[in-house]
Every structure is written in C-alpha cells, then in structure tokens.
Length: 275
Image (cartoon, rainbow, N blue to C red; front, top):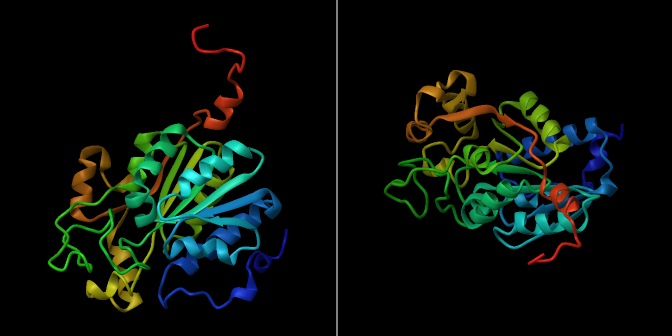
C-alpha cells in the first residue's frame, strides 16, 4: 500500500483552513480510506465547486477540476458519462451542494449518476461571508440572520435517499472510524453515493452562536448527534427532528439500483423516434 502521506501535496502545506475547522479531519479520514482501498490515483478525477471544503482536491496528488459555485455535480456527471472508466469523487459543502447546487443534487441522485460525493456540512457559508445556508439550524445566527434563522433546514441525507441515491450515510467529524468505513463503502459503490459529514466551523458559525472555541463546537456536535437506530425516526416526522435540532447519524440506505452510465450503455442505439 502506498505511504499514507504520499497522497498529500506537501508543497501546498500548510492548509488554508482555520484553527478548529473539521475539514482537516475529513481529509485525513478520506486519505486513509483511499489508501486502504489501494485505489489508483491515475484513474481518479476529483471535482469541487466553491467553498472551504471545495479546496480539498488542491491538496491531493491527482487530477481535479475546480468548477463554478454549485455546479460540481453537473460537471461530475458530464465527466462520468464521457469517461466511465474514471472514478469520479466530489468534495462539496452544504452551501455549494444544497443551496446554489440544490437542483443538480436532486437530479444527480435521481439519475443515480456514478460518483461518490462527500458533503462537509458546517451549517453556514463559511468562506463567502458567514451567510445562512439551507442547513443552518432554526433560530441560529449568521450574517444574513442577525435575529435568528426563521427557516427550517434541509436534511441533505434524507433528500438523497428520497431522490434515489444508492448509498447514503451521515456522520460527524467525531465519528472517525465510522466515517472511514462509510467513505470506503461509498467509494466502492456503483451509482450515486452520498456521505454527509457534520463539521464544526468556529469562525463562520461558532462565534456567532456562542461557540467560538472549537471545543464548544465539538461538544455541540456530540450533544446534537443521535444514532439512527436510537432516533425513533420511524415514530417521528423527519421535519420534527430538524426542528428539534438533532443530527441523525448512521447509514441511511445501501441499495443496488442501476447507475445512469450502465443504463445508457445498455440502450439500443439503432432505435430512432417513431420506430
């Protein structure tokens, strides 16, 4: 197995991430999962949009493309269809994926496009000014919700399940072993795989919500997290869980729908409309 740190682009150290940011943990979990699977770096392409988490591919010794805000999944779908021999991996954030790229997210899940998506959810637009995103908790403060967020957040994992993704899981950066395992299963799964990672942002989210100390944010993640099997989700409306501010963690679905690329390969190309 290749040396773990050979995956890093050491010439770009140190990283740009703030002290206490969870992205460093996500990077290390991913590199470990990638190394343990012994994937070929020359047969992988990384795609990202705009945001803190979208900078991750810049620290990996592999081919990558940095797209415009919210368009990572659209570009990744195009790469998958044109080069199905490559493994497509997307790094994105809750603003990039769930807000500006929300429509692409829904349809990539629906189409079951063959890619693995890692969404780092820090509940805020961390890099672009600290605005509220689609996952900002109810009544939480941001630069655009100075009196508290009156909207209720999207549940990105449940949205992916409902739209048709093959594999969906959610963990926090505290659940390192479980996260590595889900990353490995997502990377090896055919079709659309989605792994959401709840991550602290002490700078953009924490300091506006009395959690400027990273330790407070990690404790907040611990308190808010509820294992799927213990969340009583089957007895409660998922929207109600969001209102209560819980973070349901675990694996949500692991199924075997045919991927978009495999269905297109099976089409009869000699059949034209009207025949």
